Length: 195
Image (cartoon, rainbow, N blue to C red; front, side, top):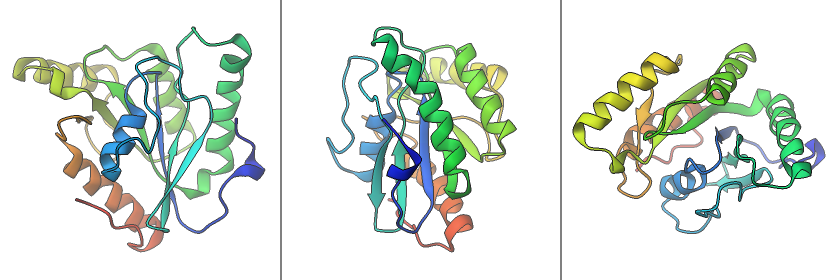
């Protein structure tokens, strides 16, 4: 799991990936870094059960957090996820350049997604909503997904929810622009990685 004393101690900011189980957080990390299999993926929800740190360019970290909202894991593990995620976010809050609230573009946002957004706002954590699996949607369905996300979750200070695809690469370049900007604000441009 995660204990504050286990956190990486190197310099640089964090980009944190949050979202329900099986929305594609690990796949999104792999696509952003252009590396297959770095972040472990699975079709089985609840696979990520600890906080995973990925050092990027010796300049900043991607932090893959366990998904929330999936009941088919042992109760002991599920009960530990809330404190793990909240503890990490609070312990490393001063290092977080941006949190990505990852949702599935094909699904309606849940109450847990709304709660996570409200929590990020209450803690004044800068965040952006990234809706994955957009390649599975038609043009009309993408317009509907954008509208629904805007109605249900609204915008963040960084802007409107973004539609992205880990498999097709849609929206990845634009997402990198947001990450680069957030990292530049936090660390003086040390993290530039956009593709």
